[in-house]
Image (cartoon, rainbow, N blue to C red):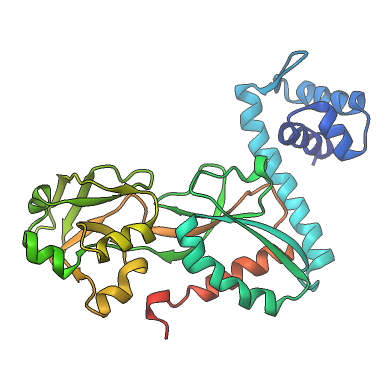
Length: 305
């Protein structure tokens, strides 16, 4: 295949966001890198980059070509990695990010087993309730709660996440038990402030026509932590649409009651995924961690023990 080296250099320039940075990473001169990119542009007959003295950006054609180049480089790196490190023991530092509540409750407890299993590894776990850019922030792996995969990323599914409407008995004694989704409009609904939830909840009938209903809800408390929602629920402050992972034990112990048994909540996200970049070498340490998490969540946490 022609122009593989030029394609690899072009991909590095895009990822490094400058010719100078790419040259340093490739141990080449800036002029050599620039010439290789120009040679690729001439061979393809398209302009790949918009160059100014201060900025560097992809053209439309450059964006399309970069995606193909990145995949080629990733495949070459994967082949090299497979040849040289197939039997290598996982070692080194893994930078991992996860949402605060989910990371605290479910990711952190899974890591002790991994570190015991692979003593030459080290994990830096960063808990953040915001979107994390893997490339810019230098993470090897990010745990995301989502309904769809971010564009340009690769993911392994870890766990399905179901949601349920529930409340404490004390709250239901004071305000009554809703029988249909429409009844929620008259209740104090605790709002889980994760992106996409807002004040509109959607439900689908489990049987029959499986009609959907969307209900506008309101309440006096909103927080971006499922654990904080759980605490407010247990205090009888209101009812909430909460992750089953968070409230399962309280439902089993009678601290909370499940509501609307004939309806399935349709939440903005329905799974936990381990996300990484396709153009980054999936090293033995990261692959081992992903495999460990998949194995850990093979049985949902609320079914363990």
